[in-house]
Length: 266
Ligand code: ADP
Image (cartoon, rainbow, N blue to C red):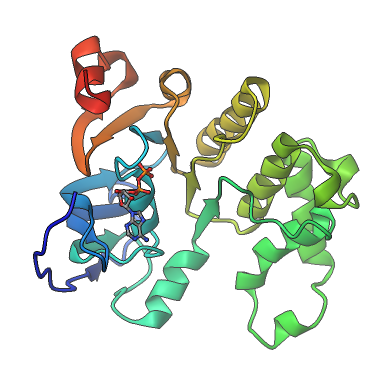
């Protein structure tokens, strides 16, 4: 889908300056994404992400899931609309964007781990944002290592702490990716197709870990998926996307056949 609209870059992000749990962790107001080649990935949409919920972005390939997810930490910069965050200041400057990203952990489809490094070394990279640039030039200290080991324990990989990541299975690597996200001690976790390359058993394990973290630590998780059965199993809320439009936003039990047709076509 392409158009030539000349959308002004209008990302104004409001600091709600409050840790009040009634304030959504992030609010998108008429946010849209058009790539420089004219592709409209996301037509303007508004939504709020609440605490304590697993929100699944569901839709076929090209529906706009990744663009929406990545606009939530400005890895993809919205071309129109406003974003408000509960804490973090105005995101119209690079310092505030950095702060917001420090508080927002990302789990990727291809893990984005350094294969020749151990699980522990990879998880420790989740701690880097907690220190000044100069401090990160030195090895991180015992407190960071303790936190990283606790995170590995949380994903049942404590015994693999010193094992190179490239010798681990895809499911184990993704669990290291989750431990790294946890080590960041984030306010929100964004997971971009985290199970796209995993077998069903590993997929369920990864998704139940994310669900458990959300419920136990009260960290909202937003996860993009294209597998309907996992969305039904793990989501508190499903946002269905089609052609860059939100065509459904409700609880999984409301996902009826007619709605599925809207999301996936006839
Ligand atoms: P999904 O995650 O649902 O597969 P995406 O957000 O990746 O969807 O893509 C939405 C649309 O934007 C698709 O048409 C895709 O081809 C296009 N797109 C994604 N990334 C870029 C990019 N960097 N440049 C141009 N078009 C892109």
